[in-house]
Image (tube, rainbow, N blue to C red; front, top):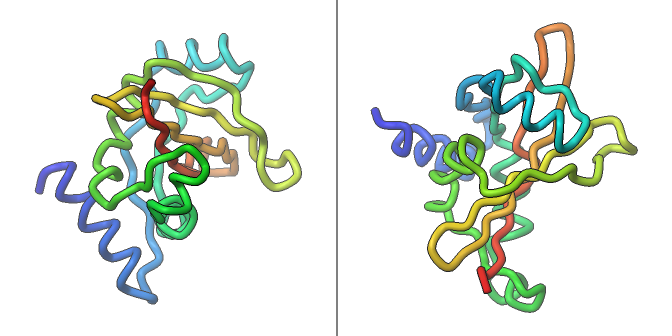
Length: 147
């Protein structure tokens, strides 16, 4: 099964199966990218795993898929197909920024921005460290027109 097919199946399962509680892993952040992220944001992510959870999918679809509401915000609604771009946004962003931390500052955030055709994708990943290591967990994805 290709990476795109795995992601599509993960998104479908997340949206349709209430008992589904899982995550999908996109591999680790390479050392050169971890160094770049640390230089730009001051956040250490060396050895971290790139991950998306069912709750990531639900948040994105509930908060950023309504085309009318997103248009009112100057944004474009996210579709299920856009999820397939997440690994590429992680791997080769056009820019990286420090994002506002979530959960009262408990989880620092990193924004990966990538322009694809006429769209500017903004992927925010929360940095979660625990006894198992560091994870970059997809927090949200939104799209703006690339003007």
